Image (cartoon, rainbow, N blue to C red; front, side, top):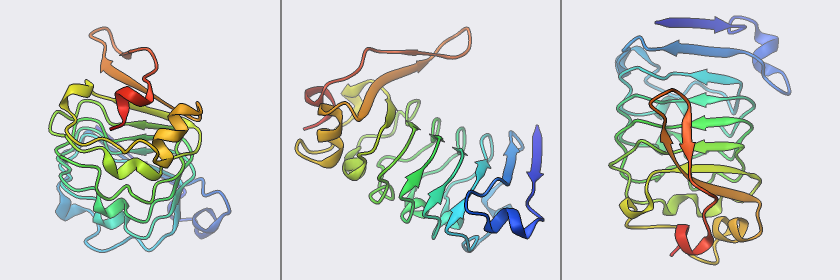
Length: 192
């Protein structure tokens, strides 16, 4: 169990051009009721590490347009990503592994990522919401056969795969720690 709030009480760190504060609450099984029931009131955030809790939604993230560092929401029970609907830019790791959502609805405005980890989500069947994602980065997916709806060929996302701005791989956790990646995927594999 790990809880850390670095710089969260320092107003200048919250309002900086590149916020450097972080919120880390890992593996504490905190339920939704312990998180803000309204938005956090910020358009730019630094680090959010909320893996290993009991979150079912991320509505408190509504209004956040940019994360200058990492967003870790792994190993929760998130069934809706609509709280991320204002997120446009993610500077580093955006990890949503091991959750309960069936679609990426809520990520339609996401344009820029470094890494988007979507694997270990066996209920996820609809990837179409990331059609606008187009700046450089990597998207890590589950076995492609589970996806019934994929981004459309000709979309920003699919053209970015074609142009080698976005890379996509099937990823699995390794029993020895870390992960195992497939070779880079093609537009024909990822898009419909």
